[in-house]
Length: 355
Image (tube, rainbow, N blue to C red):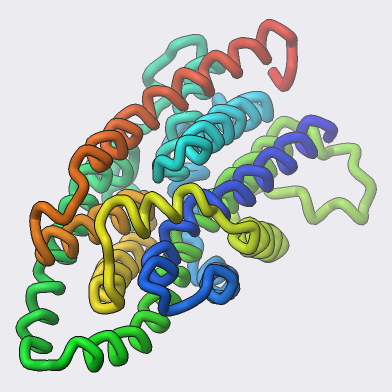
């Protein structure tokens, strides 16, 4: 039970960090265009994230039972996965790099599961046909890791081109006024979509811990008032949804200024019309992915949407040197968190913790 409490605290710490790490992506553009103050934008994103967290559970189930074999997972495995993800998130946050919390968690879980199984790569679910279609790391993680940034760039570019043609004869003051108001809606849409995807990832991890504790008999001696912890089937409890939603909203309220500066100012200078196009694009892609249970990187999508919009504005307007650094952070996330999860899990095994 003590180890489960550590897992729960680590999961909530990850969710809180996700709140100020990834949510900065959702509101960076609306702040950089000065449509909302940072405080107003954070309150908007926190509310939207809170609401979005209750909209479905497909992503939670993908994270909890679609990446690794549940049969080898122990409390130590889950704790090691969370440690790897948290460490990487804090490193990239410190350097202001918008990396993916989703991929950090997936990498940590895969590495920890490999350590627990003593190097058996068969515990990783690469590809399988589930009840609702293809499942596993390849269709739900690797393919979207490549396709979603491309979609963000292309759709952002095309949407910006359409908007530019539509407002070609408008005065700049009218364009800024109209899209300044519309950007409030697009920022809320982006925050809502972020909540539907990212909040569910921690729900999946906590439910996996509850399922593991129940299956191992760790909860057998609990008093009757704690029987709500028993999870014989992989089902997302309402209290888990509430806990994750509130924690992410609290993390959002804490801000995320380092990443916000990178996303909102350093990649490309934006006006309200550009912010609207980028947020609308990213929100639509993320919301669609959440419906199909794909744990998408909201960071990848909003960043490439901003790049696409900026490239339409003027290709040289995008600071491609900074983009190069961001892409390297994306590429390294799963391998590094996988290694961190593996080493942490091996350390726990040597110490006899959770195995």
